Image (cartoon, rainbow, N blue to C red; front, side, top):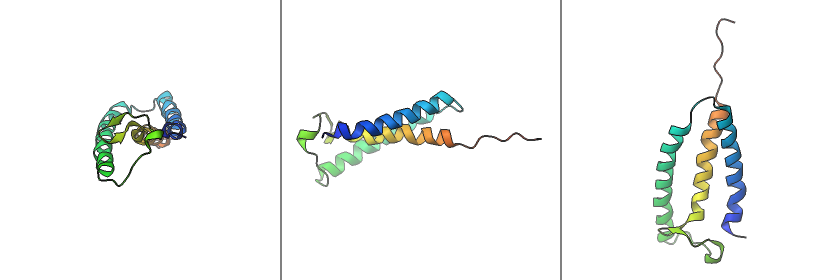
Amino acid sequence: MTYWLINIPFLAAAGLVFAAALALRRAPIAGALLIASGVMLLLTTVFDNAIIGFGLVDYDEDLISGLRIGFAPIEDFAYTVAALLIVPALWHLMAARPRKTGQ
């Protein structure tokens, strides 16, 4: 089994939750998502390259696509992308709705 086969269910679930949040459109989340994406992908790049470069983590070459950003295989970024989709979407979906006053 390749890393992509492991990642697909998580990315699909995150995508579905994110789509549900967008469909409700109770509040805009695009701006925050762009900022968070930039920060988290940069941090993932730095720290993944550090732990792989220092030999703390390694990947079986037969199970990755071969595409890398520095030392980090592209598949390693799937967890960050899934988190970037699902965390703000769940926050958005679970946000308390404003109560109507005077009733």
